[in-house]
Image (tube, helix red, strand yellow):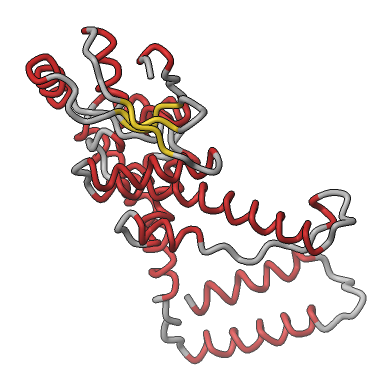
Length: 279
């Protein structure tokens, strides 16, 4: 197959973590010195490149011959799954990069499971007019399967989903590049996308400081609540205790009126007096 006939699919290419600048330089130097040793992998009959995007680009640029290997896959989702899982054996990826790939793989597995379920339901219910007529889908195990395939925990995949759903493209790319951890990216993904991009541009230290601030602000209300729970009634003098009993009786009288003849303002005043006596 001619290199010019190979199709670069942006959606497929986006699944592959980019090479670092030094890795790209080393790859180009190797291709110029030794030629293209590893074949490109293409989806049979679709001509979509699945593996070797950087090699393909350099071979086209420098007019280097490269062998092309075609593989047969049943669907586009199968092609995506192949690309994602293939990265694990070809690249030295950190845990955060694998988690981000697992999040994408979870989506693929979920769609595959849904397709299989619908096909099965259509066979069992040939008269069903649309998907809404079909039985509900069984609970998906896509996350557990994706986590196992990419050698990360399901919980980390869940964290990565926060990044893919709420993170800006620049933040996601920073995780793919290996410069930002998935846990830090998940925290930053809560911020407006413009602010996320600013932090990525500012560098790792800015992201760490932002994560610290986010976690600190989240813990502050909890600390306040804890301090409220620790409040204890103060000791009362005999006169104060007598007044407290009187106020409690008054509160009971007000709240016992079925027709609520007294406005909530009266009740709040009594409660305020009780609080002043007790706290």
